[in-house]
Image 1 (spheres, one colour):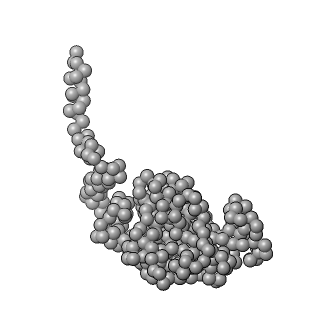
Image 2: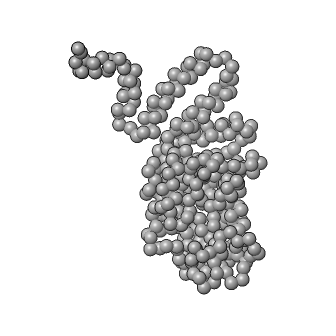
Image 3: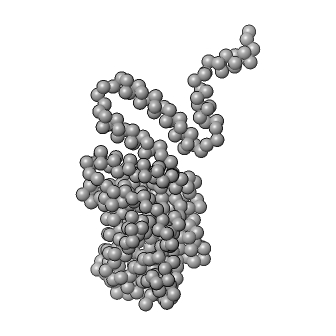
Length: 331
C-alpha cells in the first residue's frame, strides 16, 4: 500500500500544466490584471492555431478581431499613459469605421487649465419647454428605445416648495402651466461626490476641471453610484443602447458621448466634448429662455461668477455636504 504522501506527490507531478496558472495568479495584482495576462497568453495560443489551420479568415476580419480583443482588455482610462489613451481612441475610431464604413472623431482632450466648471439655473426663466432635454439626448447619443434622459424638468405647483415626489416630470400639456414653476436637475458634478466614493473599481472620478466622468469600459454595472447619488443623476443601460446611424453625433469624447454598451452607468458630463473646446453644453445653447448659465468658476469676469456674487443662490440638499457645482436662483 502506498502512503497518502506518496499518492499526493504523484498527483502533483502529474499536473505540470498548472504551473503557468500559479505563476499568473500567485503574484500580487488585481483580478482584472491577472485575467488580462492569463487571457493574453490564451489568445496568443489560440491565434497561432487559428492562423495555422484556417485559410478562409480574411486579413480585415483578423485585424478587427485583434482590435476587439485589445479594446476589451485595456486598462482603466484614468491610469493610462498619454500614448495608451491615444492608442485606445484610435482603436475605437477604427472599429467604428470597420463596422459601419463611416468615420467618427473621438477626443481624449484632458482638463482645461485654470478652469473649474459650474452651472446656474434661473427658476424664474424656465418655462418647461424641454428643448434642453431634446438637445442633450441628441448631443450625447443617448438610447432612443428606452428614452434615456440625463435631464429632468420638474413641474411643481406654486406653494409646494421643492417636493420632487409631488412634481410632474412627464407632463403632456401646453407649457408654461398656470400656477406652476419649473426646475431642472441632472448630474451636479459634486465636489464631494458620493458616487465616486462607492465605486468598487474606480470607474468614476472627478477631473481637475470639476467634471465627474465615467470610464464605460471599466464600469462593472453594480449601480452603487446610482444608489449613492442623492440627486437622481445616474442612468443605467439595461439593454444595448440604440441610436439610429443617421442620428449618431460623430463628434465624441472618450469620457463623454461616445457610444456605450449594455450594463454600464452613464450621466451628464457637462458635454465634455463641447465644454473642453470652449463651447457651452447643448442644454445651455438650446434653452429658448436663457434659464441656463455655464462657465468657469475661477474666472472673476464670467457670467456665472456674477450670478453667484449678485443673486440669492441656493443648492439642493446643502446639508449633505456634497458641494454640488450647480446653483439655483430667481430674478
